[in-house]
Image (cartoon, rainbow, N blue to C red; front, side, top):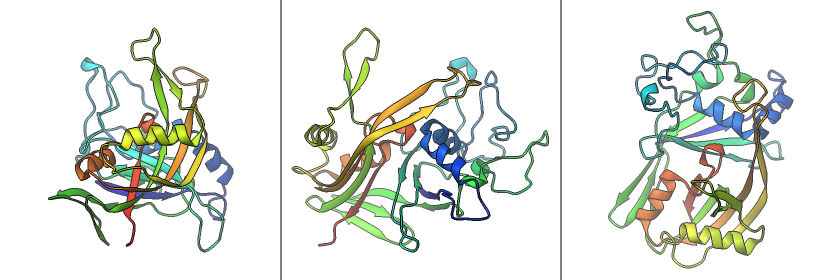
Length: 294
């Protein structure tokens, strides 16, 4: 598994002046998801049309470690089942910059395979595809080189072990754990559609706490404590040149931060790998944790 940090350009780098375009891109979660997907290239079904100026052809010769997509004969679905071996989760955070003050947008990506950010953002200067078109066109979106590091989430007896190149965390039942989660708290309602529609949770802290408690109930021991609770709306939209032209999307978004006491490391491991709640393709569901120092 890999964790990546992408620092977004917000206008403080004179060599990359397109900060206004960057902010518009960041507000459109549909576009953000598209761009991040390009870091995990695969074989594209033949009937899907590609835009050569946007990215080079997907193939496993260039990226042999990546997963191939299903072929056109079985539907050509580009969304592989999210598991330890497939897919990625992401979240847009706004941490305070200790040097310059203010908040800087950072995209946190957790992926099952190694991402190719050079490919996704066109960071290799003057690179061309087989038809002479630029490979990638979005290096201006980043204000610093992407940071990616391998991490592991394993079980050691009754402990959950989180390991990276710099530190190891051992979490045992009864330990106090700090967490951060941006979620899309919704519930299915009965209607005439096959899968039912989704309705946002009532916008009160108690209703959101109940929703999160239900999602975490098998992993945590007792109630959790909120340190931060930030609700709001998130958006995405398509252009008139795409399928479903002009479609606008919106999601109910809540940032949860707080602490809970660990009960079952096995269940928590599953939640870390698969995410929590709906809307995972659009920046929701990525759970981040760290132990609370005694």
